[in-house]
View 1 (tube, one colour):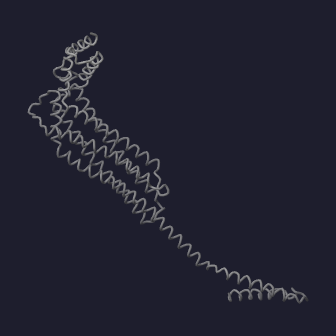
View 2 (cartoon, helix red, strand yellow; view 1 turned 180 degrees about the vertical axis):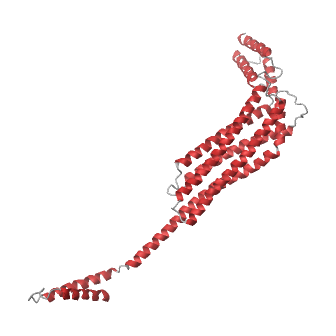
Length: 374
C-alpha cells in the first residue's frame, strides 16, 4: 500500500506543479481542496489493496497454462477415443482374417477331394458312370463340409461388417461423425456381402440336394403314385397335389437342369466375390481417409500418429481378408467346376432323369387325373 500512497502523493504534487500560478486565485481554500483530493486517492488505494487482486501478468500466465492443460487433455481424449475405436475395428477384422486364413488353407489342401466329391455326388444322383472314377464317401463328406464352411465364413464376414458399423456409431459425435461417403461405402459392402452369401448358399443347396440322392426321391414318389388305387390318398385333392409334385420334380431335377443351375450359380458367385472384395476394401479405405481428414490439424502430432496407425492397420487387415478370400473362394469354385465337368452332363440336354420318359410321365398324369375324378 505504501507504494501506491506515494504514487498518489506524487501525482498530486505533479498536478499542482503543472497548474498555472493563479489557478486558485486569492482563495485560501485551494489547499483544502487538494487535501480532500489526496484523501480520496489514499482511500481508493487502500480499497484496491483490500480487494487483494492478483497480479495481472501472473493472471495471464495462469490462464494460458490452464488453457494449455485443457488443450492437452482434449487432445488426449480425442486421440485416445479414436485410437481405441480403430483398434477395436482392427481387432474385429483380425479375428475374421484368422478364420479366412485357415479356410484358405482348408480349401487348398482339400481341392482334389472336393473335385472328387462333386463328381461322386452328381454321378450317383443321376446314375451316371464316370470311367475310371470310384466314388468315395469321404470325398462326398469333404465337399459338403468345405462348402458348408464357406457359407459360415461369408456369414461371419457379414457379421463383422455389422459389428464395425456399430463400433463407428458408438463413437461420440463430438469426436468423430461418420460421413455420408463412409456410410454409403459400408452399406454397399453389406449389400455385396449379402449377395455373395446368397450365391454361396445356393451352391450349398444344390450340392446338398444332390447328396440327398435325387433318384431315390423320384423312386419313392413313383412308388407312392402306383398305390393310388389302394387308398393311399384320402381324397382327390391329394391326388392332384401328388401329380403336380411329380411333374415339377421331373421338370426341375433333371441332370441338365441341375448342372446348368450349379454352373450358373458358380459363375455368378465368382462375379459377386469380386464385387464383394472391392466393396469391402473400399469401405475400410474410405473410413481410413475420412478419419485422416477429420483429425488433420486438430490433434497433436503424437495423437494424430496413433489414430492414423490404428485405422491404417484396419485398412491393411481388410485388404488381407479379401486377398485370402479371393484365393480361397476362387479355388473352391474351380474345384467344384472341375468336378461337374468330369461327370459329363453339361450337354445332356433337357431330357428327363434316367428311368423316367415323357411317355411314362404322360401316362402317369392321365392315371392320376382319372383317379382324381373317380
